[in-house]
Image 1 (cartoon, rainbow, N blue to C red):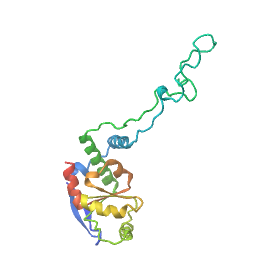
Image 2 (cartoon, rainbow, N blue to C red; image 1 turned 90 degrees about the horizontal axis):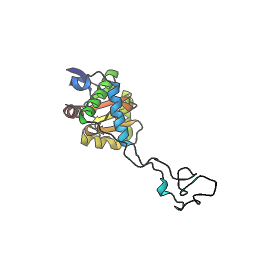
Image 3 (cartoon, one colour; image 1 turned 45 degrees about the vertical axis):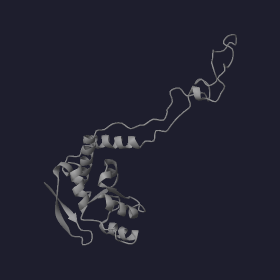
Image 4 (cartoon, helix red, strand yellow; image 1 turned 45 degrees about the horizontal axis):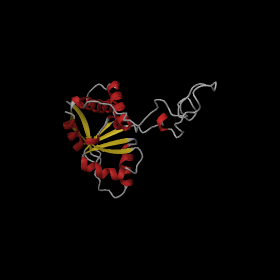
Amino acid sequence: MMKAELLNIDTGKAKAVTLSDEIFSLEPRKDILNRVVRWQLARRQQGSHSVKTRSEGSYSKSKVYRQKGTGGARHGDRNAPIFRKGGVYKGPKPRSHSHDLNKKFRKLGIKHALSSKVSQGKLVFVDEIKTNFEKTKDLVKIFDKYGWQSLLIIDDQEKAKGLAKFTKRLANKDVLSVNGINVYDILRKDQLLITSSALKQLEEKLQ
């Protein structure tokens, strides 16, 4: 089993904590991380782009001119794609860009993202982050003390809500509950911080 330090933010002291090798000791694979991130971003893509087809044009549907005797090409109505400002042929329509990715692979992606942070020395475990301070600047002092700039905090459901009230005013500081943890947010922040209570829930979730 892998060992790590569990930091007490108030005292600055650390104690040993045991980590699951199946979650934190994997050899990070970029292909797995890439596939999961693409799945996440595809689900977020709006897909509301739309153009008018020939049948939706505002021009008259009547024939432009007679079929024969003009010396010109034969045409139907003014909305044909060949004309300027006519309808678009097979243009984009509202649709979902999401695709399927099974739960087992999504879990594997989170494990590889966590292992990646461990291998880079960018994962910090803390006993807890108390939310009994009065102002946001009190929380900023803690971040400055340990040099945490671009940071994602993973905490349990209730504590994450309380902490998010303060971090939402800060740049490059995000909070997620264990249920909301995902590969994209882990990778886009430089530092990852996980509390002791969140660690227990996370290991149960990813087993």
